[in-house]
Image 1 (cartoon, rainbow, N blue to C red):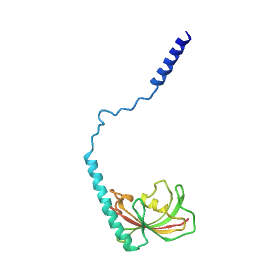
Image 2: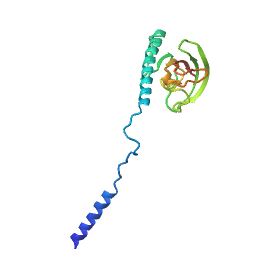
Image 3: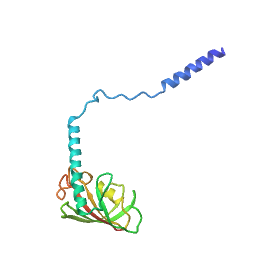
Image 4: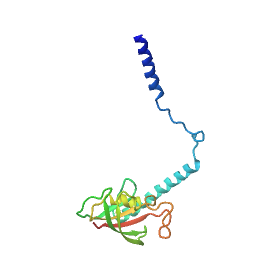
Length: 172
């Protein structure tokens, strides 16, 4: 009798363990391995445009000054003046003065801003450039269109596919 209870208990434990496993999710029948050829084509076109733009920006940056460096994500920067403040990080409240220029040097806009780094309140290229700086620093940052206003631009001031130069001084 004792062995029978053990066998029944073992059966129920095995049954519970096997029946409580989570079933693998299934794809809906309309989600096959179809490839959106238009999306792939647009992606390829934009990648080629970005590569071409990177070459143009490299030429512009190095013609301006050999001290320009390229960041990992694709913008060019040069720290003009080193301040004595603390490093700019995510969540830092950053107050800065900024001149926005076209690649030909035309002043598009002058702004004084206060943002919180990491909150995506400005274009990603500029925000990432600010993270390379300390409070009190001044820098020139050349931002490709794909890290600025992208394919849509910011009409009427910035047309689509427009790379920009930011001359920045961190105030605080």
